[in-house]
Image (cartoon, rainbow, N blue to C red; front, side, top):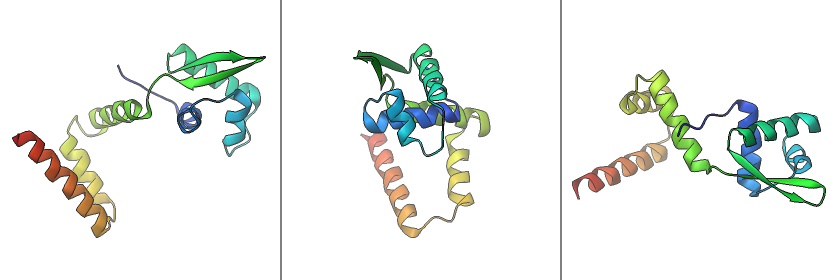
Length: 124
């Protein structure tokens, strides 16, 4: 299943992932920009229609909660990015990431360690 969010939807999902659940007012309070209550409500309803969030009625309010895990969204977004911008090649993506940024020695060491661990998994 491909999971796809607009930037605004991702902002709202970030709040839900961090908080576990939230009302419209709580989401609005966490987001830095001044969004209208109705805008946040609309985004949450769209996310619910897409099957990404659910809600429970708590008194007069709805408490929204994520139905997709952040990790699943990351994997889906990375697959889509790799497919659309890097011709489906994880190697091209990694090459771009490593050569286009000023990575610290520590970042490079951690990446190398991850790659070494992945190679060892493949050998078992």
